[in-house]
Amino acid sequence: MTEEEKINAGMLFFPGDPELKAKKLKAHNLNIDYNRLHEDDTAAREKILTELLGGLGKNHFLQGPVTFHYGCHTFIGDDVFINFNFTVQDDARVTIDDGCNFGPNVTIVTPLHPMLASERKALGCPDGTAKRLCWAKPVHIGKRCWICANVVILPGVTVGDDCVIGAGSVVTRDIPAGSFAAGNPCRVIRKLSEADSLANNAALLGEHTIL
Image (cartoon, rainbow, N blue to C red; front, side):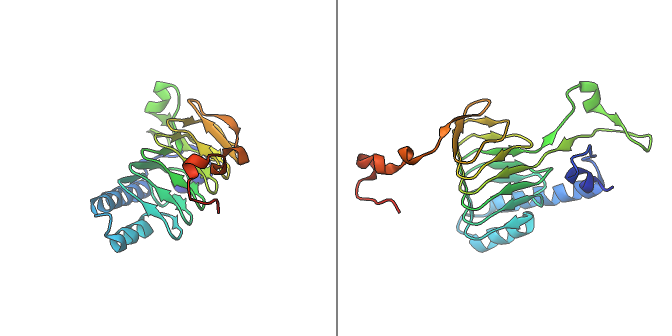
């Protein structure tokens, strides 16, 4: 198996593999190129994102700066807004579905490392060599989620559709659809309902209408 195939299978892999290093170097350079551009240089920014990411939908906005580890393992849907300082360590696949919004300083992490220091230093490989290995678990964020400022989403997490993740949360486990969840570790506070509608706050809604 290739190291890329091992990642997809959830197996231990060698991040120093030349093919993986080339992918990361490409992404790191494209991150720098994107972050150097002015916000209104939309054509050049779009060209870089198309080259950087594994998939990119329509009507998106990534404020920047952004940092993708591989880039090609991240797939972003339609109508997605991403604020400042978005970091994605996408050793495994990261999927962001349509209609999501991200506050500043959100981090998504997929790789995991051995708990014991000796095993982090090196593990024995079938060819007799000793290498520093890790593994990774995919992250999936469902449709129309709002991920607030300074949230960290950890390996293997799925956030269901229509969730709100409160600021500063560390999401360690799956969050069911339609939930407001917050905290470290993040937990479900309540299910979202019509009680959360701005229709119940006439002073804030003012002359606006609920569509």
